[in-house]
Length: 399
Image 1: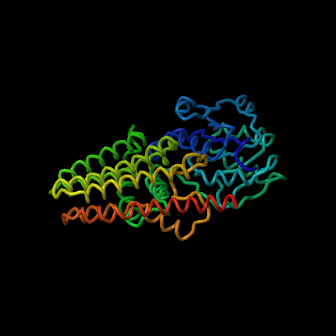
Image 2 (image 1 turned 180 degrees about the vertical axis):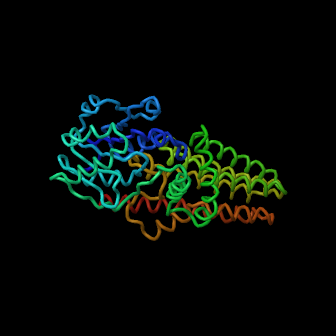
Image 3 (image 1 turned 135 degrees about the vertical axis):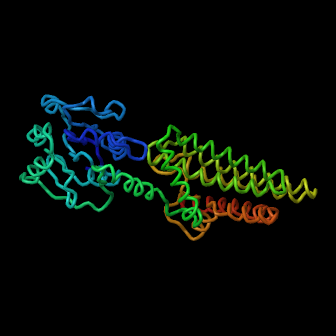
């Protein structure tokens, strides 16, 4: 199969109801399984088998509880992915599994004796096992003995063991660590991301949403610009708030991805929120410099930086985000081209936020005007480079 269309996920949970209610990074195991299955493309639904449905928070998760043999027999999904209770596959694992199976066959997974796949007729045969405790292993053995049974070797994704509550912190660490992107700048990857991940591990257990986190980080960044505008020792405090904005800006995406709350609106809000904060910082530096010394140079440099920043953001949004339909972060590169030339890689590097540390250092030494000189020259050159790339790629597409 190309995807999970026609598949359903079935979890025999008799005697394991408590494990299904354990919270993992802000969601119960059952909620996380349902959201993982949906994102992996499993369209047939998630069924939990238990004779004690009152002990499961099924309504909140979107799962369907099966508590009688008659209800078991009514499951009409042609392909049943059966998962042992207390285990959590990730999206990549389920996607690869669904892409590897064919209707009408039974499958077991090499090195993962906690999940198997069976066709609807075979499921009807073994389903009565599932209203008994510890019935999964018997059903797995029965499937493996089937004439049509095949073994799949999975190469992508993971299955996490959360049967023991003591294992959950380690699983959460692995899940959060997987959120670090290869495209991040050095300081963002090794400093900011460590702090933001630690914060996000606490925030996922609260009611705060990713979009609320974005707005909070934007307001902190604008407050930093206001302090920079006042000059003197306030500039250092403003630069530190700017850095705080950058750290907290990582939390919104982390919360969204870990709780399956990603949205197009959230990605756009995050992208433009960053660029508004950067523009506010550039304007504040120029205005403070002008208030101290007068003259046209600070104002010209500030507006060059602001107009070029917003112009670059608008071009990147138009080229890479406006019509984006695939999953993942809204912003990944300054170019929509799949082949990344040296110029594109250099532009991607310059678009990262490691420059914020230079703002902090120069603020500490009272020389933010030096930063504005670099930005007032560099930002227009960056915009010109993006325009050149756009024209070049458009010509190559029409050739």
